[in-house]
Picture 1: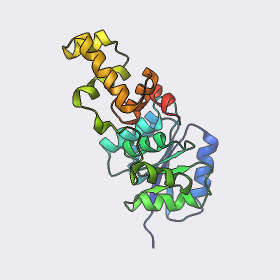
Picture 2 (picture 1 turned 45 degrees about the horizontal axis):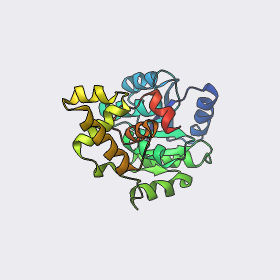
Picture 3 (picture 1 turned 90 degrees about the vertical axis):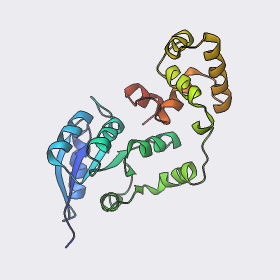
Picture 4 (picture 1 turned 180 degrees about the vertical axis):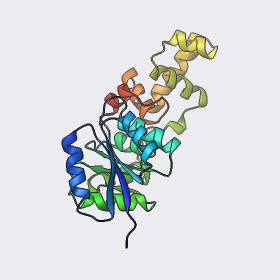
Length: 224
């Protein structure tokens, strides 16, 4: 007999949670351990219930799903997280990898895909919906990253991080103990190496690469 897999449902829409619960109820070995309507509640319920798997929406109030996943990965690494969302961009998929989630299922996927995904991540594997799997392969196996941050020096990464945090050149110079012209030079080199020439673009890149904490503003940039 298959071991029961206890699942926590985290989504801010009650109808979605009800639908997920109905889907899982068709399988004897899948049990809904609890529900959460936002990221903070998902963290609290995970600590209390210690589920095997968390089905995590991304766009939720209080704390978005990827930030909650990062916190769970640090605090309760034995709890596997499976993201449920609609984003398909390579940047969004990369951010899912970086959050510590073990997989990603599109909300429009067939209902038969969800139990398979839960079983896979629970057993220690990773699962991505076929529609987004190729993008993940391109991003990670074929190495089709645009301007990977490995080309940046440590000081250039520092400057990039402070730009993403909203600091001016003068503020960055003061923080690093260098001249403003030195910061401007590093800034120009970063833009040239990454082929990104706007502050918004640099900020998005820094969020995607995990150089700055992922907050709600970062999610608006990356898209979910």
